[in-house]
Image 1 (cartoon, helix red, strand yellow):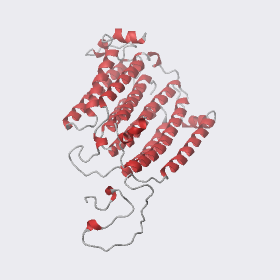
Image 2 (spheres, chains in turn purple, cyan):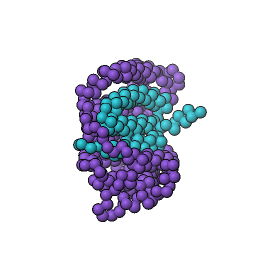
Image 3 (cartoon, helix red, strand yellow):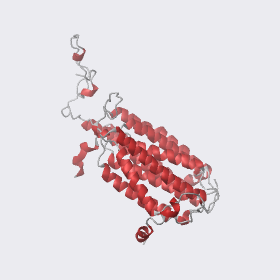
Image 4 (cartoon, one colour):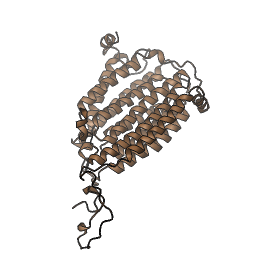
Length: 305
Length: 102
Protein backbone atom coordinates (compact mmCIF):
# COMPACT_ATOMS: atom_id res chain seq x y z
CA UNK A 1 0.00 0.00 0.00
CA UNK A 2 2.61 2.46 1.07
CA UNK A 3 4.85 1.43 -1.78
CA UNK A 4 2.05 1.93 -4.27
CA UNK A 5 1.39 5.40 -2.98
CA UNK A 6 5.09 6.08 -3.01
CA UNK A 7 5.12 5.33 -6.69
CA UNK A 8 1.90 7.03 -7.64
CA UNK A 9 2.54 10.24 -5.74
CA UNK A 10 5.92 10.45 -7.32
CA UNK A 11 6.88 13.88 -8.42
CA UNK A 12 3.33 15.20 -8.26
CA UNK A 13 3.42 15.78 -4.55
CA UNK A 14 6.59 17.79 -4.82
CA UNK A 15 4.96 20.38 -7.02
CA UNK A 16 3.13 22.34 -4.31
CA UNK A 17 6.10 22.20 -2.01
CA UNK A 18 8.66 23.46 -4.45
CA UNK A 19 6.43 26.13 -5.92
CA UNK A 20 8.32 29.39 -5.94
CA UNK A 21 6.74 32.33 -4.27
CA UNK A 22 4.64 32.45 -1.15
CA UNK A 23 0.94 32.23 -0.81
CA UNK A 24 0.77 28.48 -0.82
CA UNK A 25 0.04 27.02 2.53
CA UNK A 26 1.07 23.38 2.48
CA UNK A 27 -1.69 21.15 3.71
CA UNK A 28 -0.78 18.39 6.04
CA UNK A 29 0.31 15.38 4.09
CA UNK A 30 2.40 17.20 1.55
CA UNK A 31 5.31 18.32 3.63
CA UNK A 32 7.93 16.55 1.64
CA UNK A 33 6.90 14.74 -1.48
CA UNK A 34 8.40 11.30 -2.01
CA UNK A 35 9.97 12.47 -5.25
CA UNK A 36 11.71 15.35 -3.52
CA UNK A 37 12.95 13.02 -0.80
CA UNK A 38 14.25 10.65 -3.44
CA UNK A 39 16.06 13.37 -5.37
CA UNK A 40 17.54 14.86 -2.22
CA UNK A 41 18.76 11.49 -1.02
CA UNK A 42 20.38 10.66 -4.35
CA UNK A 43 22.14 14.02 -4.52
CA UNK A 44 23.22 13.75 -0.89
CA UNK A 45 24.53 10.26 -1.55
CA UNK A 46 26.62 11.49 -4.46
CA UNK A 47 27.91 14.36 -2.35
CA UNK A 48 28.82 12.07 0.51
CA UNK A 49 30.56 9.68 -1.85
CA UNK A 50 32.66 12.52 -3.20
CA UNK A 51 33.39 13.80 0.27
CA UNK A 52 34.52 10.52 1.78
CA UNK A 53 38.28 10.27 2.14
CA UNK A 54 40.10 8.76 -0.79
CA UNK A 55 43.22 9.46 -2.77
CA UNK A 56 41.43 11.79 -5.09
CA UNK A 57 42.00 15.42 -5.83
CA UNK A 58 41.15 17.89 -3.14
CA UNK A 59 38.84 19.73 -5.52
CA UNK A 60 36.55 16.71 -5.81
CA UNK A 61 36.05 16.59 -2.08
CA UNK A 62 35.32 20.32 -2.00
CA UNK A 63 32.69 19.88 -4.69
CA UNK A 64 31.20 16.99 -2.75
CA UNK A 65 31.03 19.10 0.37
CA UNK A 66 29.33 21.91 -1.53
CA UNK A 67 26.79 19.49 -3.01
CA UNK A 68 26.02 18.03 0.39
CA UNK A 69 25.67 21.46 1.95
CA UNK A 70 23.33 22.53 -0.84
CA UNK A 71 21.20 19.44 -0.31
CA UNK A 72 20.97 20.15 3.39
CA UNK A 73 19.98 23.73 2.62
CA UNK A 74 17.21 22.64 0.25
CA UNK A 75 15.89 20.16 2.78
CA UNK A 76 16.03 22.74 5.53
CA UNK A 77 14.33 25.38 3.40
CA UNK A 78 11.52 23.01 2.46
CA UNK A 79 10.97 22.03 6.06
CA UNK A 80 11.21 25.65 7.12
CA UNK A 81 8.50 26.64 4.68
CA UNK A 82 6.35 23.88 6.05
CA UNK A 83 7.03 24.94 9.62
CA UNK A 84 6.33 28.58 8.84
CA UNK A 85 3.04 27.83 7.14
CA UNK A 86 1.91 24.90 9.20
CA UNK A 87 -1.22 24.84 11.22
CA UNK A 88 0.66 25.00 14.49
CA UNK A 89 0.88 28.46 15.91
CA UNK A 90 4.49 29.42 16.09
CA UNK A 91 6.34 26.82 14.14
CA UNK A 92 9.75 25.69 15.28
CA UNK A 93 12.13 27.83 17.24
CA UNK A 94 14.99 29.27 15.19
CA UNK A 95 17.41 27.63 17.58
CA UNK A 96 16.23 24.29 16.28
CA UNK A 97 17.53 25.09 12.82
CA UNK A 98 20.85 26.32 14.17
CA UNK A 99 21.43 23.32 16.39
CA UNK A 100 20.25 20.83 13.78
CA UNK A 101 22.51 22.35 11.12
CA UNK A 102 25.54 22.30 13.43
CA UNK A 103 24.82 18.73 14.50
CA UNK A 104 24.39 17.37 10.99
CA UNK A 105 27.29 19.24 9.39
CA UNK A 106 29.63 18.18 12.17
CA UNK A 107 28.33 14.61 11.92
CA UNK A 108 29.22 14.61 8.24
CA UNK A 109 32.67 15.93 9.09
CA UNK A 110 33.09 13.16 11.67
CA UNK A 111 32.76 10.50 9.02
CA UNK A 112 34.58 12.35 6.27
CA UNK A 113 37.59 13.84 8.00
CA UNK A 114 40.62 11.68 7.30
CA UNK A 115 42.36 12.42 10.57
CA UNK A 116 40.81 10.65 13.57
CA UNK A 117 41.64 13.38 16.08
CA UNK A 118 39.65 15.91 14.08
CA UNK A 119 36.82 13.40 13.79
CA UNK A 120 36.70 13.17 17.56
CA UNK A 121 36.72 16.95 17.92
CA UNK A 122 33.90 17.34 15.41
CA UNK A 123 32.02 14.73 17.39
CA UNK A 124 32.32 16.98 20.44
CA UNK A 125 30.61 19.73 18.44
CA UNK A 126 27.88 17.29 17.46
CA UNK A 127 27.38 16.43 21.12
CA UNK A 128 27.04 20.09 22.06
CA UNK A 129 24.51 20.74 19.30
CA UNK A 130 22.54 17.65 20.30
CA UNK A 131 22.41 18.81 23.88
CA UNK A 132 21.06 22.11 22.57
CA UNK A 133 18.31 20.15 20.85
CA UNK A 134 17.62 18.37 24.13
CA UNK A 135 17.21 21.71 25.88
CA UNK A 136 14.70 22.73 23.20
CA UNK A 137 12.84 19.54 24.03
CA UNK A 138 12.72 20.53 27.71
CA UNK A 139 15.16 17.83 28.80
CA UNK A 140 17.70 19.94 30.67
CA UNK A 141 19.05 17.12 32.77
CA UNK A 142 19.66 14.97 29.74
CA UNK A 143 21.44 17.85 28.00
CA UNK A 144 23.78 18.26 30.95
CA UNK A 145 24.30 14.52 31.24
CA UNK A 146 25.06 14.25 27.54
CA UNK A 147 27.73 16.93 27.70
CA UNK A 148 29.22 15.48 30.88
CA UNK A 149 29.28 11.87 29.77
CA UNK A 150 29.99 12.22 26.08
CA UNK A 151 32.13 15.32 25.79
CA UNK A 152 33.62 14.88 29.21
CA UNK A 153 34.23 11.18 29.64
CA UNK A 154 33.80 9.17 26.48
CA UNK A 155 35.51 11.62 24.16
CA UNK A 156 38.49 11.97 26.47
CA UNK A 157 38.85 8.20 26.34
CA UNK A 158 38.64 8.25 22.57
CA UNK A 159 41.20 10.99 22.19
CA UNK A 160 43.47 9.20 24.64
CA UNK A 161 43.28 5.98 22.67
CA UNK A 162 43.84 7.84 19.41
CA UNK A 163 46.98 9.42 20.82
CA UNK A 164 48.07 6.06 22.20
CA UNK A 165 47.53 4.02 19.10
CA UNK A 166 47.92 6.47 16.27
CA UNK A 167 51.08 6.21 14.31
CA UNK A 168 53.18 9.30 14.14
CA UNK A 169 52.19 11.57 11.33
CA UNK A 170 54.46 14.08 9.81
CA UNK A 171 53.14 17.59 9.72
CA UNK A 172 52.46 18.37 6.11
CA UNK A 173 50.39 21.04 4.49
CA UNK A 174 49.34 18.87 1.59
CA UNK A 175 46.21 16.89 2.28
CA UNK A 176 46.34 13.17 2.96
CA UNK A 177 50.11 13.05 2.99
CA UNK A 178 51.55 11.26 5.97
CA UNK A 179 48.28 9.54 6.72
CA UNK A 180 47.99 5.83 7.10
CA UNK A 181 46.35 4.08 4.22
CA UNK A 182 43.38 2.95 6.27
CA UNK A 183 42.59 6.55 7.16
CA UNK A 184 43.00 8.00 3.71
CA UNK A 185 41.03 5.47 1.68
CA UNK A 186 37.44 4.50 2.40
CA UNK A 187 36.08 1.01 2.09
CA UNK A 188 33.29 0.53 -0.47
CA UNK A 189 32.06 4.13 -0.44
CA UNK A 190 29.63 3.67 -3.33
CA UNK A 191 27.83 0.69 -1.85
CA UNK A 192 27.70 2.25 1.59
CA UNK A 193 26.29 5.53 0.25
CA UNK A 194 23.66 3.73 -1.83
CA UNK A 195 22.54 1.57 1.07
CA UNK A 196 22.64 4.36 3.61
CA UNK A 197 20.80 6.93 1.57
CA UNK A 198 18.18 4.45 0.42
CA UNK A 199 17.48 3.74 4.07
CA UNK A 200 17.48 7.48 4.77
CA UNK A 201 14.96 8.05 2.00
CA UNK A 202 12.65 5.45 3.44
CA UNK A 203 13.02 6.83 6.95
CA UNK A 204 12.37 10.42 5.90
CA UNK A 205 9.44 9.28 3.80
CA UNK A 206 7.89 7.51 6.76
CA UNK A 207 8.61 10.37 9.14
CA UNK A 208 7.42 13.23 6.98
CA UNK A 209 4.81 11.65 4.78
CA UNK A 210 3.22 9.03 6.97
CA UNK A 211 3.63 10.63 10.37
CA UNK A 212 1.16 13.42 9.92
CA UNK A 213 -1.01 12.54 12.86
CA UNK A 214 1.94 13.10 15.15
CA UNK A 215 2.16 16.87 14.80
CA UNK A 216 -0.06 17.90 17.65
CA UNK A 217 1.24 17.89 21.19
CA UNK A 218 -1.40 16.50 23.50
CA UNK A 219 -0.17 18.23 26.61
CA UNK A 220 2.62 20.73 26.97
CA UNK A 221 3.56 19.88 30.52
CA UNK A 222 7.28 19.39 30.55
CA UNK A 223 8.46 17.30 33.47
CA UNK A 224 11.69 18.68 34.79
CA UNK A 225 14.76 17.14 36.34
CA UNK A 226 12.97 16.56 39.62
CA UNK A 227 10.35 14.47 37.90
CA UNK A 228 13.07 12.54 36.13
CA UNK A 229 14.79 11.73 39.39
CA UNK A 230 11.55 10.61 40.98
CA UNK A 231 10.85 8.47 37.96
CA UNK A 232 14.33 6.96 37.98
CA UNK A 233 14.30 6.00 41.63
CA UNK A 234 10.60 5.25 41.84
CA UNK A 235 9.05 3.07 39.18
CA UNK A 236 12.31 2.55 37.26
CA UNK A 237 14.46 1.57 40.21
CA UNK A 238 15.29 -1.87 38.88
CA UNK A 239 16.54 -0.55 35.56
CA UNK A 240 18.63 2.07 37.32
CA UNK A 241 20.27 -0.64 39.41
CA UNK A 242 20.77 -2.72 36.28
CA UNK A 243 22.52 0.23 34.69
CA UNK A 244 24.88 0.37 37.65
CA UNK A 245 25.60 -3.34 37.32
CA UNK A 246 26.24 -2.94 33.59
CA UNK A 247 28.69 -0.13 34.23
CA UNK A 248 30.53 -2.15 36.86
CA UNK A 249 30.72 -5.15 34.55
CA UNK A 250 32.03 -2.97 31.73
CA UNK A 251 34.70 -1.52 34.00
CA UNK A 252 35.83 -4.96 35.17
CA UNK A 253 35.78 -6.23 31.60
CA UNK A 254 37.78 -3.29 30.29
CA UNK A 255 40.42 -3.75 32.98
CA UNK A 256 40.62 -7.46 32.25
CA UNK A 257 40.95 -6.90 28.53
CA UNK A 258 43.52 -4.15 28.81
CA UNK A 259 45.73 -5.99 31.28
CA UNK A 260 46.41 -8.97 29.04
CA UNK A 261 50.00 -9.23 28.00
CA UNK A 262 50.26 -9.49 24.25
CA UNK A 263 53.39 -10.60 22.48
CA UNK A 264 53.88 -8.08 19.73
CA UNK A 265 53.84 -9.20 16.14
CA UNK A 266 57.50 -8.32 15.81
CA UNK A 267 58.76 -10.13 18.87
CA UNK A 268 58.71 -13.84 19.25
CA UNK A 269 56.14 -15.16 21.67
CA UNK A 270 56.93 -14.55 25.29
CA UNK A 271 60.33 -13.04 24.69
CA UNK A 272 60.09 -10.01 26.90
CA UNK A 273 63.21 -7.96 26.97
CA UNK A 274 65.08 -7.03 30.03
CA UNK A 275 64.95 -3.31 30.47
CA UNK A 276 67.93 -3.35 32.80
CA UNK A 277 70.48 -4.47 30.26
CA UNK A 278 74.14 -3.93 30.56
CA UNK A 279 75.25 -0.44 29.58
CA UNK A 280 77.27 -0.40 26.43
CA UNK A 281 80.09 1.82 25.47
CA UNK A 282 78.93 5.14 24.09
CA UNK A 283 80.13 6.14 20.71
CA UNK A 284 79.46 9.33 18.82
CA UNK A 285 76.76 8.01 16.54
CA UNK A 286 73.42 8.77 18.19
CA UNK A 287 71.76 6.04 16.19
CA UNK A 288 73.80 3.44 17.94
CA UNK A 289 72.19 4.19 21.29
CA UNK A 290 70.13 1.12 22.06
CA UNK A 291 66.50 1.51 23.06
CA UNK A 292 65.29 -1.23 25.29
CA UNK A 293 61.83 -2.50 25.91
CA UNK A 294 60.42 -2.31 22.44
CA UNK A 295 60.82 -3.95 19.10
CA UNK A 296 58.59 -1.45 17.40
CA UNK A 297 60.83 0.68 15.21
CA UNK A 298 58.37 3.58 15.40
CA UNK A 299 58.91 3.91 19.09
CA UNK A 300 62.67 4.05 18.88
CA UNK A 301 64.43 7.19 19.75
CA UNK A 302 65.69 7.83 16.23
CA UNK A 303 63.00 6.75 13.85
CA UNK A 304 64.91 7.62 10.72
CA UNK A 305 67.24 4.71 11.12
CA UNK B 1 8.10 26.83 22.88
CA UNK B 2 4.49 25.89 23.03
CA UNK B 3 4.28 23.58 20.10
CA UNK B 4 6.60 20.84 19.07
CA UNK B 5 6.78 19.65 15.54
CA UNK B 6 7.85 16.14 16.30
CA UNK B 7 8.74 15.21 12.75
CA UNK B 8 11.59 17.67 12.52
CA UNK B 9 13.33 16.12 15.48
CA UNK B 10 12.66 12.65 14.15
CA UNK B 11 14.14 13.71 10.83
CA UNK B 12 17.30 15.03 12.48
CA UNK B 13 17.64 11.81 14.45
CA UNK B 14 17.15 9.68 11.35
CA UNK B 15 19.69 11.64 9.32
CA UNK B 16 22.24 11.47 12.11
CA UNK B 17 21.71 7.72 12.46
CA UNK B 18 22.23 7.24 8.73
CA UNK B 19 25.37 9.37 8.73
CA UNK B 20 26.78 7.21 11.51
CA UNK B 21 25.79 4.08 9.61
CA UNK B 22 27.56 5.20 6.45
CA UNK B 23 30.61 6.12 8.46
CA UNK B 24 30.63 2.73 10.13
CA UNK B 25 30.49 1.02 6.78
CA UNK B 26 33.09 3.11 5.01
CA UNK B 27 35.79 4.04 7.49
CA UNK B 28 38.56 1.56 8.10
CA UNK B 29 40.06 3.00 11.26
CA UNK B 30 38.76 1.04 14.25
CA UNK B 31 38.52 4.11 16.47
CA UNK B 32 36.57 6.13 13.91
CA UNK B 33 34.24 3.19 13.41
CA UNK B 34 33.36 3.26 17.08
CA UNK B 35 32.93 7.04 16.92
CA UNK B 36 30.33 6.38 14.23
CA UNK B 37 28.45 4.02 16.53
CA UNK B 38 28.35 6.88 19.01
CA UNK B 39 26.80 9.02 16.28
CA UNK B 40 24.12 6.38 15.83
CA UNK B 41 23.49 6.42 19.58
CA UNK B 42 22.99 10.18 19.36
CA UNK B 43 20.40 9.80 16.64
CA UNK B 44 18.51 7.28 18.75
CA UNK B 45 18.70 9.54 21.78
CA UNK B 46 17.22 12.47 19.85
CA UNK B 47 14.35 10.25 18.74
CA UNK B 48 13.70 8.98 22.26
CA UNK B 49 13.71 12.41 23.85
CA UNK B 50 11.49 13.86 21.13
CA UNK B 51 8.97 11.09 21.63
CA UNK B 52 9.12 11.54 25.37
CA UNK B 53 8.43 15.26 25.01
CA UNK B 54 5.69 14.54 22.54
CA UNK B 55 3.89 12.20 24.89
CA UNK B 56 4.59 14.40 27.89
CA UNK B 57 6.07 11.64 30.02
CA UNK B 58 9.51 10.66 31.20
CA UNK B 59 9.90 7.34 29.44
CA UNK B 60 12.04 8.84 26.72
CA UNK B 61 14.49 10.40 29.14
CA UNK B 62 14.76 7.22 31.19
CA UNK B 63 15.48 5.29 28.01
CA UNK B 64 18.07 7.88 27.01
CA UNK B 65 19.85 7.37 30.31
CA UNK B 66 19.97 3.67 29.51
CA UNK B 67 21.37 4.52 26.07
CA UNK B 68 24.05 6.65 27.72
CA UNK B 69 24.94 3.80 30.06
CA UNK B 70 25.22 1.36 27.19
CA UNK B 71 27.28 3.88 25.22
CA UNK B 72 29.69 4.35 28.10
CA UNK B 73 30.04 0.61 28.64
CA UNK B 74 30.49 0.04 24.92
CA UNK B 75 33.11 2.78 24.67
CA UNK B 76 35.20 1.41 27.51
CA UNK B 77 35.05 -2.19 26.29
CA UNK B 78 35.53 -1.27 22.64
CA UNK B 79 38.51 0.95 23.31
CA UNK B 80 40.09 -1.74 25.47
CA UNK B 81 39.64 -4.14 22.58
CA UNK B 82 41.05 -1.61 20.13
CA UNK B 83 44.17 -1.20 22.23
CA UNK B 84 44.48 -4.97 22.44
CA UNK B 85 44.12 -5.38 18.70
CA UNK B 86 46.59 -2.58 18.09
CA UNK B 87 49.17 -4.31 20.24
CA UNK B 88 48.64 -7.51 18.26
CA UNK B 89 49.23 -6.12 14.80
CA UNK B 90 50.53 -2.58 15.21
CA UNK B 91 47.79 -1.18 13.02
CA UNK B 92 44.30 0.19 13.47
CA UNK B 93 43.14 -1.05 10.09
CA UNK B 94 39.96 -3.09 10.33
CA UNK B 95 41.04 -4.97 7.21
CA UNK B 96 43.97 -6.41 9.12
CA UNK B 97 41.47 -8.71 10.78
CA UNK B 98 39.82 -9.98 7.65
CA UNK B 99 40.40 -13.58 8.59
CA UNK B 100 37.79 -13.18 11.31
CA UNK B 101 34.98 -13.06 8.82
CA UNK B 102 34.86 -16.82 8.68
